[in-house]
Image (cartoon, rainbow, N blue to C red):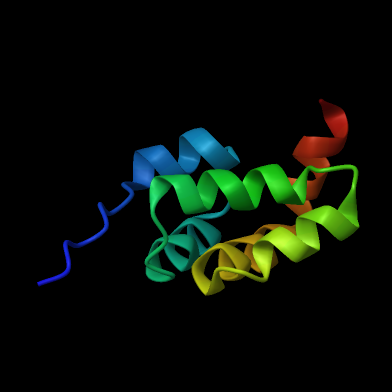
Length: 83
């Protein structure tokens, strides 16, 4: 029997992506992504080398789903631009 991936908590999602709208946080939780997968999506979303990030995210559907949610949220992009 295959071991289950540890689920990420709401607080962990907020820690990784910032204080986004509740609907985005819930959508990220619904992807079933792990902490590492969300962390990777954030890294790829903020990566200056978009081609490398695109290649990496295509290898995992959960990470890609989180990446797409982040890239579609103007608040996430706004937060990242201010850093």
